[in-house]
Image (cartoon, rainbow, N blue to C red; front, top):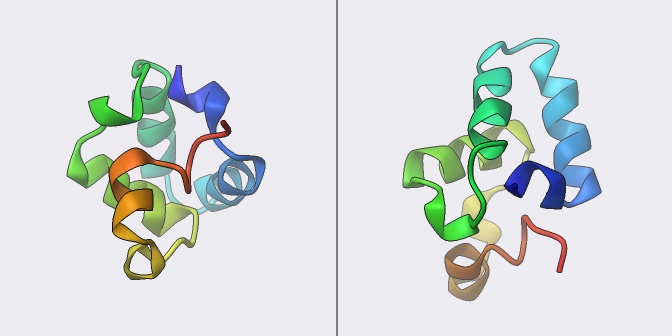
Length: 73
């Protein structure tokens, strides 16, 4: 599942934000049901960026398409 593959700094920031925003827990639940980055919706990717303090406009097209910024290789 993608949740287990999240880069540590992404997961840590999301857990920190979960204390303030309950919707992060909804997102964690979604990540626990998905196996591949390509299974995520654009809305879910945008939410991950929001709650992990990643500015998606700083990501390259390759990173955004393949998920290199999010998942441990």
